Image 1: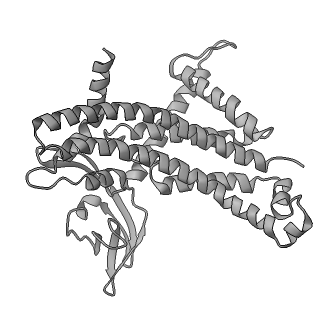
Image 2: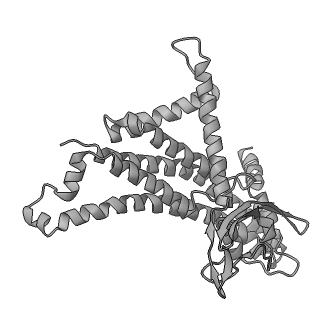
Image 3: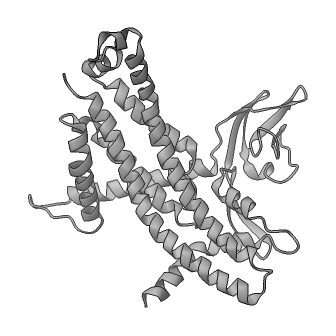
Length: 347
């Protein structure tokens, strides 16, 4: 019974990927690398699936400032091969590959690009889901009539998650000033957790590789770095510029240099840890999906058996990624709390 339901869930999760990959048929060679990179990379349009040889795509708004001024239009005007609109087009090769460029004095130039890409739209959708979760839980508390109100349903789940993160991570790691940083740390946890879960569902409007994009993880790491260094105590800065070590180590200055480098290596570790783990998980699941199409010309027996093997491994990887989705949100919040707490220490 469990295996039957698990197989149905796995097929439902990977069906859009299978439909998308099947569009490489009719004489067009299937490229696993192209398929994996297409789903992991950011883009100016949201490819949902392919149906009877036709791609179902949601165009996204393009907002750029070129040498001729601001331009706002739909991405379907330039996403087709060879399309040029108002002097702008998408480069198909070179250092600006898959980015909007313009020709200035015979050379490709990148305009100021603040377009709503697939990753940006996925991040906005995740934020909306997080806001809804918080607002629904808050509304349940506002309606309570008793002092010893026990929330149920979604409000109860949110209370359990928030209490767990507060009691086991934020309070012990940050210390007495935990209330000042709890809103940011809880927001970071739920944003990463919800985004990771949505990234496992390849059905529009979920499925975007948000936390697997290094730009997103860079921004979150920078936010933690600002929280650490803007609100650090005087003792924190004393330990950076004049630590309690022998004088000759401070005079060189060896230890202050190491401490200053540590200001940047800590958020760098946060950025790379989250980015690499999420990207690796998505890449493995997509690569397993590619096995079905790589073996399609090896006969029905080989293709059928490899399809079953690939589906079983995808079930396992999706279950594992559910754990990773929570674990990476937990680790990011815990390390951020530790870094903030170290900057709040007294003498």
